[in-house]
Structure formats: structure tokens, C-alpha cells
Amino acid sequence: VECYDYDSDGSHDVIGSFQTTMSKLKEASRSSPVEFECINEKKRQKKKNYKNSGIVSVKHCEIIVECTFLDYVMGGCQLNFTVGIDFTGSNGDPRSPDSLHYLSPDGVNEYLTAIWSVGMVIQDYDTDKMFPVFGFGAQIPPSYQVSHEFPINFNPSNPFCNGIQGIVDAYRACLPQVRLYGPTNFSPIINHVARFAAAATQQQTASQYFILLIITDGVITDLDQTRTAIVNASKLPMSIIIVGVGGADFDAMEFLDGDNGVLRSSSGEPAVRDIVQFVPFRKFQN
Image (cartoon, rainbow, N blue to C red):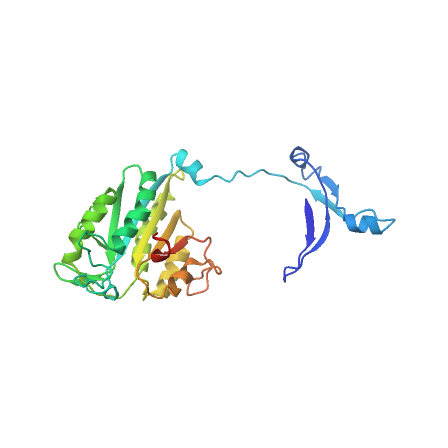
């Protein structure tokens, strides 16, 4: 065990070290602490009367087992996979070959390729392979009001698609029926999944985990509301994968990822944990 004098600039100074065994540490108790001399070898070699650099007193030792993802799956944890698809106007007219929603002659585009790439990995951990899929940012029939949380099969009471192929089929059927519009709001669909994750925490066992896949062209409108939604969701059994399609500026997505610092809500509340992973699809599609 090595002990250091902490410095905020990172230039920590070595105080000393000692060696012991786990069984020795486990003997420690508040009434009978286990003590070790902290020895600085350089000082001991230089100073004739050197005894130690202090005494480390251990009053409690506990072994905490960190479960892996596989441990949870083997223990019966059910993954719930939800997909959110960006149907906003910034994607371009689906009838135009320049559109990210344009279906090529072989029936694919970047959105479908991203769904296949991520979904084929995740679906094996979802036992029933029934996935709720929602679109956002489009005008939808029959009234053509803008919706930021509509089931792409247009069945609010049963928004589930059967497997990844079911998602693909529903997407292809949905695309000609909606009008791409805007704005690009992430928070409604994040809050939608978070409500189910919150309900799952009321169960006796930690048996459910929720994964939201958002596929977008990267132009986000409700950044403050989305930050707050993510911070709130960080307290729940939930993760978010954002896949950016196209070649737009993804700075906002990188910001939400939080890899360069703790994400905070618009009011300054920090995320409990990093639950967002952003992937620029064109960088990894090959």
C-alpha cells in the first residue's frame, strides 16, 4: 500500500508504503485496529535515525465485489431496448438521394444501417426481442401535428416491433406517411424511457435495465431540457447510446457524452454517473 501527500496540480509526494495481506487487513476492527508503519525507503537510506513516516491505522476492511455486465445478465437481469429515430427536416427530403432518410435501390440508408449495427448486438440480451420504437420531429397523420414521441408503427397502445427486422419493416412503412419537420427535441423520448426505468426501481430485485438508442443527424434544439433529462436519468437503471449519422457538426452530442467533464443540468446539478455514449456513425461504420 502506497501513501501520498495529495497536491491539486497532480504532483503528489510519496509519504511511504507498507506491505500486508488481505487476511491481515480483515482482522481490523474499531476496537482493535491493525497498524502498519509507513516506510519511505529513500528517507530510510539517507537518515540514520529514521523510524517511519507515520502509522497507518486500519479500523475496518470490507471486500466489495464489483459485478460485471455478464454477471447481471447471468443473474437474470432483463435488458429493455428502445429506439428513437430523428425524423426532422434537417435530414433532407426522403425522396432526394441527398437525404439521410433516402432509401437506396437496395432499400437501405444510414439510419437503417445504424439500427442493424447496434441492434444486432443488443437484441441477443433481450429475451423477448420486442422493441418499442419511437420517432420524433415529424408531422404525423391524420392531423399532421408535430410529435416528438410517436410510435413508428402508429400504435400507441403497442409500440413494439418484433426483432430488428421488425424495426426495419416498421421504419420503411412509416417513412412515406410522415412529413419531416422539427424541432429536434431529445428530452421527450429520454423522459419516456426514464419513467419506465423509475418504475422498475420499485421492484424488489434489480432485474431490469433500460437502453435507449437515439439515431440523429446531430442538430439538437432542446439542449437545456435534454441535459436535465439526462441528469435525472443518471439516477436510474438506464443508459443512452446516441448514434450520429451524416456529416453534421456533432459538438452538442460530444457535450452530452460527458467524456470531457461531468455533464450538468441547466441548473448546475451534476450527473450521478456517465450514462451517455456518443458514436459518430461514419467514423465507425467500416
